[in-house]
Image (tube, rainbow, N blue to C red; front, side):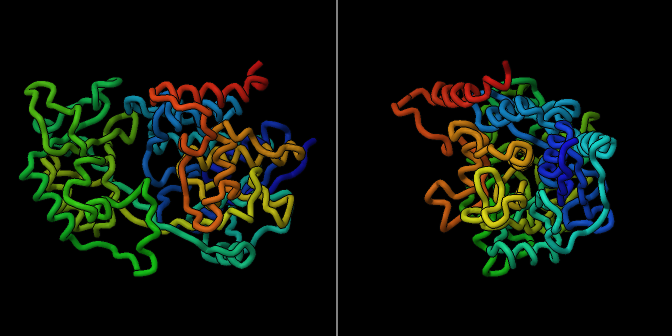
Length: 431
């Protein structure tokens, strides 16, 4: 019989850790405050609910997210297993039916014989050990204050969510299905704009009424999920070189070229709901209706979910966490998920695996720095020198990995070499 492990938080990191431990014979007591206490971003009572995009990014093996997926698969990731069961078409990306995904995670965790889910809001760090704090970026105020008192920091940034609209409300005489560069299936719904239409949209968006940051909050916006208005403030063409980039998206029938293209991605298997890719916003709800309906094809858009903005809290992990996600002050206390400063669904889930792995194997000191998991842990622990003073949330990227020791001009080959080298370190687990 394994030890009893206490986990605070039923998001991706907490569920991944709970499953990893339970599958290896440990008893798990998982605390989750929802639905007793809701957060500003969650909408359901299910464990593992996704609150931002429904995409877990690229599956291609020569991408950073593809490599992270491969490593997590080897370790038996629950999140990825359920994600592939709930997959919806999204080209080379792994996107999921949001509701089916949460239901799938919830059912597996609640029905596992070695996991007890306790509906309770924790207002302090549990005294029971070993314990994993995986309460996420929306940690309740009382618990967040206790964590701040003990570990300092109290850092945060703001995260934005894109609107979701009904497919039936899209004018299909103006929209077309296609994937950029014609890679993969034509899974994205595209809405093209000429220069005049784009400039009208841009000007109205920039002039719209918004939820404003306070002065001291303005620099704490995560680049990977930046509100569209913040991107637009950098210049009128920022969107046309970013999420609205038209290159590779001519009309499949007329061959018409566009000045800007808005892409929509499926939110569910039925294809009844679509997410406005890259349109995370801090516009107030009436303004979202007015401005997004200026996009050709969305004149009568029915909004199933409006965009929103919320605070994400994370601790100053360098100096407080080891590469095992174990705290330096308490060897039986761990943190996992976005509260550590990892950013992204996969990264959050991966950190849950890392914390659980560390509990199971006390001699474990972290995965090799040439792996995605090892490099991500180095970033969190502050072993990368530049992280120590100005620590900011980050996804895993190839820049975290040690170089090859030689200059490789072919970027695709270079990334593939990173991936091949990383997976070599897991070979003993696959044999």
